[in-house]
Image 1: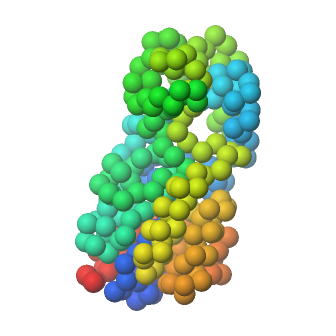
Image 2: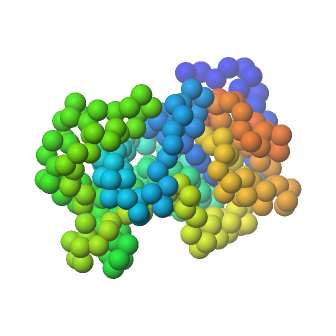
Length: 278
């Protein structure tokens, strides 16, 4: 889809602001919508009540509900392919224009697109670990176990969903929750749950990426999560150019050097093909 004149002008302003600078990139869910992964915070998204880490750790019923939904969600992630936006960011890094990506996404699509320096702030759905012994498992191997223990879950009609897309409690009746095959302990996906803090070392890695850059591009994030705002503030205090690409308003539009209200795939592709070599 061709860019409108307004968006073309905004892209040209972004190129002027970013040219000659090494760019750090922060991405949110909006970067992955063109890969078929929903943005649960975008305009028109249903109101959701994410499970907290306290609920997950304390309640066997909550864990059953989580694992049914998580397995179905993981299958969507596993089937998704990197889109033009992911590939454009990988090209920026390959050309030496980008220092890397800090992502709030757990889908792993930046890595699959070829980006080499990716800080996954909220973890990744690719891994699961034991909360007791620390053993790490590949999600693909665990999915085979889940479907062997719960063969009915492979038929979508067997898992009724609520109007907001969440798994209904009756969907979890009889579900066998996977446990650690080493010690029998509780497994947890390697993602940051609602109410859980981002690991300090992971945030320091993100800060370092921004610190060694000369500009910041924020793509597909409404900046509702405070970690994104904190990274933006690190860049703003150093008076770095900040370009925000997002459909709709974000919490930091007033602090952007350039705001581009458009889809991330086409804009990132335009930036990757237009920015001059340093």
